[in-house]
Length: 127
Image (cartoon, rainbow, N blue to C red):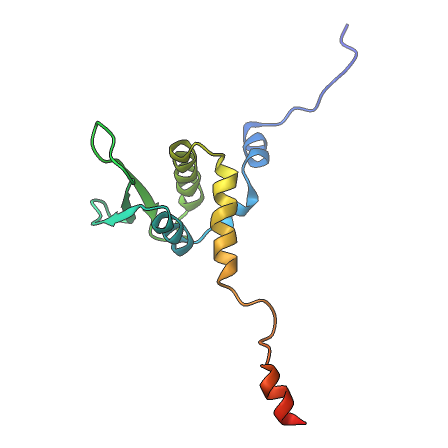
């Protein structure tokens, strides 16, 4: 006789619990900047709606490419970025979450933090 019961999650709920919610905050420009910092080369696109980047280094089978969606507005954007981060994680032999953290951290560095401060010279001339 079964005495204990566990909570069951449907597939959508399981997926939602595994996917990092920060994924939705990634912007195309931040992904491009990350790829460029890592030595990826942009190449002319061969398909509408995507930016194409050539993997750094060369494999025996020839160069490989990754595709970055052009717009965050597309319905499939989160899924495409999820796939891209998984591929980058495999290429870099890292966790996808660590790559996500690196991209977001670099993006945050470019944003001002709080109100602009005046220089000390400006404060001195006021008195």
